[in-house]
Image (cartoon, rainbow, N blue to C red; front, side):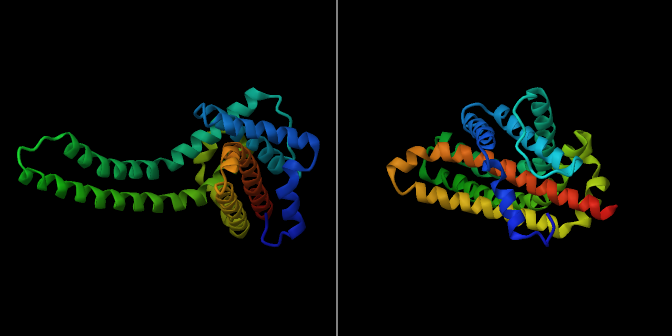
Length: 251
């Protein structure tokens, strides 16, 4: 997506997963995978990410408009999703490790205090001090972890687009290749991230509305599953368009 994209182009992009009956059926499968992800870890998400990767491949390599392909080559979908998912995990790992350290810093002192049996009340004070130190230290690590996620969020769109375009896991670590594409269309990637963030905020707003009544709360997991599928497809399509435009600017 370029910074000069029109409202009509954006509207078409946001609506392509639901523009026809076949597209809606394929989106429903994506939603079911999102719902299955609440029960089965990782596997449904890999299929969903791989399906979004197929759309990215057609956008980048075939210069096509975003289209909803059939769910037929499941092996190809799973393999591509596994490559993209593993690459995402590795890029996110530093921030995850730092945040886990923060979590441990807060929990371990509390567990020590909970399972200790002081003989007098004066024996509790060291544990209180350790717990306070662990709490503040843990909050600091959480803050650092969140800061580490910021460059990760910037790197993921061009990196995942590069993995999808080349169908190669190792392409995630060809930094110079995808970085020059990102640099050539920074504005386009910024627009894609802003639109994706806006869709995410709208999803949160819808959740808040559904929390207002018991009936809507019952429907919330199904809505969440559908939105996970929709956002995965549309957000990655946005990134693929930004990547394609970046490649065209290099040529």
